Image: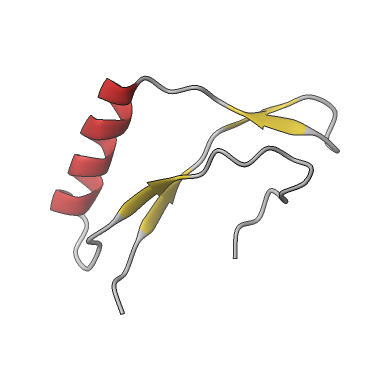
Amino acid sequence: MPEFSSVRRLNEIVGMTADYYLFTHEFLGETATRIINEVKGINRCTYDITSKPPGTIEWE
């Protein structure tokens, strides 16, 4: 099973709600490439754009 890393940044509004932060594609591409190339055992990187609610802050 592949090991993966997730990138997520939220703009918290009041603790009960939050929206995802809009990174540039350039930043996401550079970050994912560095994570995959520099962190042993990682071969995939995801960017979670789920807002809260309905999603939770913790991603399991």
